[in-house]
Length: 273
Image 1: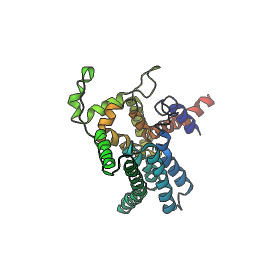
Image 2 (image 1 turned 45 degrees about the vertical axis):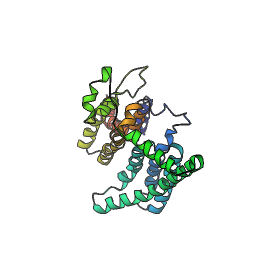
Image 3 (image 1 turned 90 degrees about the vertical axis):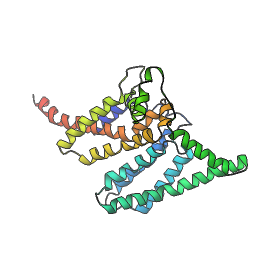
Image 4 (image 1 turned 90 degrees about the horizontal axis):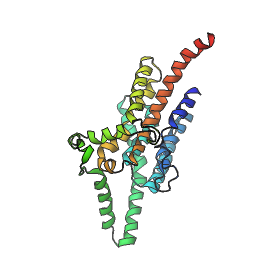
């Protein structure tokens, strides 16, 4: 209970989660649907779960995501959705890896194909042919993925780092997770705190599985920042949100678990005194 309270208090200052909460355009809530559902699903059915039920439910949730926000942050969404599956079921066996890939390919293929076909059908109605729809999808991908951009003025030094994919990463760990109108605290601060807490929990042998899963989940935001760096370069008013899908949420949980563990050791001593 204490861990939940601390986590809640630590999440409140992270205004990127709430920034577009009332937006009917971004609909950021859809990015958490499969993640939240699978947490509940595996928590209720740890020993006896139906992979068929999991696959059908996930395909529906993926379709809802594609319907509301298209393929925006697609790599972030795909990786973050699989995090609970990894946390509850991971085994370092080839059978696990094959089953994991097969299951999630089946999940994504149907809603992906249906969404693409629906978009092509819309272009057929609007322009009279499917080719325009295909051209639109290819253009949408290339505009987000290519790296044809440069920096000027105070950010000119980033042009050198750009060839190593470090320019985007430095900007996104340097941005503030708290509204800068109050105080500027860069993401690197909370990430550094998370590293220290992860080391503490690992040494104390406290929920090592959570620690490992948390640091695996960083691949979700990094996938977008690296593969779709053009989008990340332009949309600095939006893309900080991907840190929370779900990496920073789990990192905050790691920090809260560490604080709770320390309090359990110190509070009784204070009370006795």
